[in-house]
Image (cartoon, rainbow, N blue to C red; front, side, top):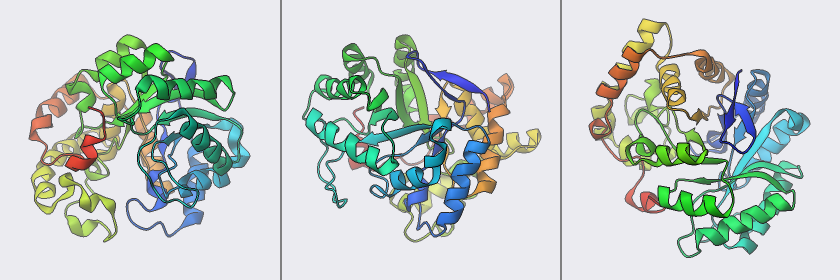
Length: 328
């Protein structure tokens, strides 16, 4: 797989990464650990280098899974993880905590989970509104100086926060939800800020949490414990309303001899972001990875931009409470 510079601080990654969140039961129970391990190793075989997780996935289970599955291939991969909530060691969540002393505790725990001595890209998962971002980023910078972290980033932040943080220590990447269904970075001007400052973009949920693949046609397609059932965009009413938008993606895919998921991923790449789709199975992984070589034409892009405008998508990507934590 081809590689690309992620930001301007020296980090080079595969043009498509791997988001491991779904392997820890977020989208329904994970029942096949052997397949998960095989899928992660297949991703390395395909040339994917950037593997994304967070201490909150599980919590802790996802970091441990990556450490176990890919520990022997540590030199071939880049580990990205995120801190945010003040978790106890047994996984009980507390409030957001952006204090440097908490960041130091969190990174040591993640290093133990991975079984490594350095994290390649360390994100603040959500900004703590009670701690100045300058103080939090200063704490993250100390980890770089100590050799525990190579590069730092933020997740779901505004242009103003990005500028304040970047002035303290150069950010390598900002992660945000980004898909044909979620264009917040483009609509708000945040992408322009990132381009100006030389900060890379990592887009999570690039297939619209699976919806843009066309595989989800109703709530019956989601397991009873799937967290997407609690998101406004996945209410029965909004699923039905958004199906017509997926049909535009499907039409382009069929004309190209591709899949809707591949078209969705190619669109994110065209915006100058590194998508990190996730899956639990090798078959879907191979399908996703093939999108790394796909280039959408100007006519296809125009069709998608006209058909899937932000105002045409029914339902918000998060609940009101979840959106309030995104620092937008």
